[in-house]
Image (cartoon, rainbow, N blue to C red; front, side):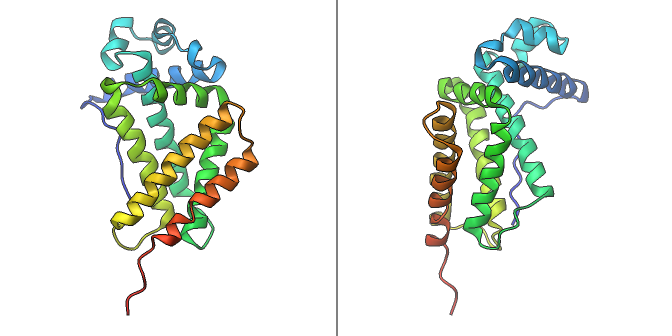
Amino acid sequence: MTAEVKPAAMQLTERQEARRRRILHASARLASRGGFDAVQMREVAENSGVALGTLYRYFPSKVHLLVATMQDQLQHMHETLRKRPPTEEEPAARVAQTLMRAFRALQREPHLADAMVRALTFADRSVSPEVDTVSRLTTAIILDAMGLDDSPTAEQLSAVRVIEHTWHSALITWLSGRASIAQVKIDIETVCRLIDLTAPAPAG
């Protein structure tokens, strides 16, 4: 069963969507070079070829912009993982493999990862729709990796939420230098065992 999630966004024309893509790409490039502090709204506007006022109409603040950048990065990861799904047989192992692949993708761009995670940490209620979309995208990635034949049960969705929280927490502890990649892998594999514990009993 495949979960489809589209980022929550206003209805845009093709031209507006192209402009939004340029803004997100400029944001990611700046963050990749220097992290959260390198993403200045005026510089984003200049790099994406839009007026500063136009940029603020799309993204009211730097936090809105960087959370939207994380949406975009997760959407790209989701598409990549669908093209190259996990190779493990058991659902728990597939999810652990998928999340470690996503983690390593972020590991290749540590400044960008740090900027996006800091934006999520700073996000207030005004950014709730964007933060919710990040959560839904992460959930969709996990559910796709599980490869369920039926809709997930309430217990399985609860397990997915705990896995999602652990993955985000592991990302934060790694970015702060308080956990190694090896420790992150152990933590992810451990929490993914919840998938086996919450699997429905076989019929009959």
